[in-house]
Image (tube, rainbow, N blue to C red):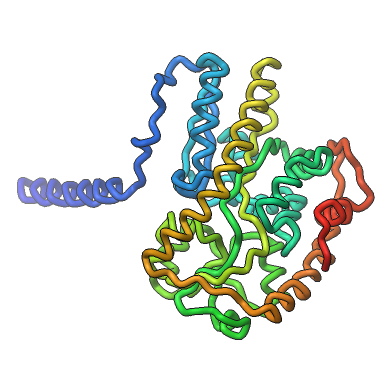
Length: 358
């Protein structure tokens, strides 16, 4: 019996140490702790994001937390959980819809799973610069209609922040489209992106963002469809040391909340909540422009090679990408009972407003 107990203690000790080691590897939020005690809040709101809060568009979650606490005099506390702490985006979207959590800064690529209209901003070469994004965000009824993409799913979209211009981070240099077709590109779990890569005759590897680091190190993927800012901050450039500019879309986080929870707040707090999200997001979008340039410069100093495709290759990408606009148009133009603006051809209106030329 004593022998049995001894080995049981040893076994439990090993399990405990392994568990402690795993916990030690978890990202820490200590540097982003609030400078107030949230214990007295009347209303708590758990908000998820998959990425790193050094990215301005992600840090918005903490900025909203602090500003909302100030404006509501401690009545609402945003418990912001970045770093995929609650899981991948498709998984967390389901939690949000069910009300298990109250909010999410969801990437525009994953948002199409419950709100196909959000795929508008993923269409190639449509809203593909900071300037165009600013114009769209100030477009009034067009932007408001876009943000209502998940209303029929019980989710309210309030505003957006960004994380830069999409391109290709790769383990070998991609100087031509032929080079690109030899790469195993990870793309998000989104219909628009998968359709686009098929139009480009590039075979995508679809996987959740939390799975990317291991897959990249093991060679399961040899490239990322992502932005230079994200790749540098999340250390993907440690493996993928080349970045090819494509700039076909802006990376966005859409700040969305459970509709039932938001409507359960007193009217004055609902108004303050919405105004706070809008004000913080507008400020963060301005900061994101500078951050992309800073992160590219940092990456270049660390030896990352940045590449531009030829004009012929870029023109071909644009020409082939236009087919995605046409194929995905019915999804973007679909109307739902809660839509107050009911355009006949929403995509065409946005294309005209942005001055998109196929």
